[in-house]
Image 1 (cartoon, rainbow, N blue to C red):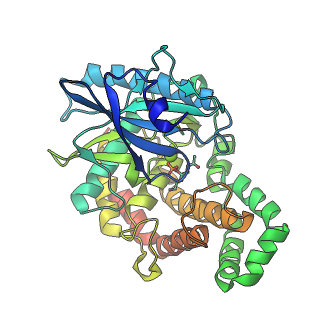
Image 2: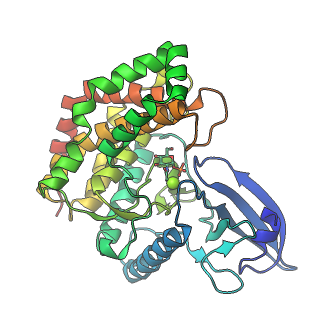
Length: 372
Ligand code: GN1
Ligand code: MG
């Protein structure tokens, strides 16, 4: 079957007229599908779930269905009081009424409603956008924090558990491929030293969880800036997308991921490393928006680990990219030789910049008004 014939399996009226690849994701294959009838046109997002990353796509879909049904109910209940129309993609069923379609090769495909007249950006545009980014994350967390995490399957065991990534990194370092790549690149050896210096820090959030200071909640898992949609008409944040990593986790993973992606003006794919730095001004705006929503459910312990979560998730993503480079690019999709090494360098440069700005960042976090 082709993606076109698969697109026709979902319950959207009309005939498929176009299938346009969306290249921003690093894991799944994504398309924008256009279907037309004799009187109108409908668009939706079609995705092939990468089973090398998600071994149980059925559970990914069960989580997504459960969380979107819950959130849609909540958004409807709140709609009259809300300052905007909040949106969230909906799972579009197949013609047979299933949440996903399995093709003849056993690949799992899903269809999601499009958040129309809205845009997601690779980098933060201005302070208002940074504020909106934090506001959307806080709002989403506020809603899903009421969803019992034990009703979500752990679809990616070990996801965001930094000590686990370090363990895997050590195993990869021992392989012939990794030794070859390290031997051939001074940058890779620099990266290795960078990781070594920060080993002790890797368990900061898991240790806090072990001591009972932080607790598992339902989280998004991947709230980077490209997964936050901004309304083209009002300029306000309107939706969180890419819900396939929704599962039990620490809200610090989400905060750290959102901040590291929004406060690097050069973006994750930057080629010129000199342009990579942590933008404290954008950060202050993001924190303001975030706390206006999240202030009501964050505990004192949650707040204490916000700075660490930013440094950690940045380091962790750098480590994940670097490990994948050493392993021969087996996890993240790449477009050129050394792509994962370059991505790792961007995150590690950002991590250094975060470390240098720690006092300022803590000031921002502590100085932000608390609205309970
Ligand atoms: C991957 O596929 P995408 O782009 O939504 C990754 C995230 C990373 C992100 C970095 C399941 O997300 O953890 O932060 O790349 N997703 C998974 O861009 O590993
Ligand atoms: Mg994702």
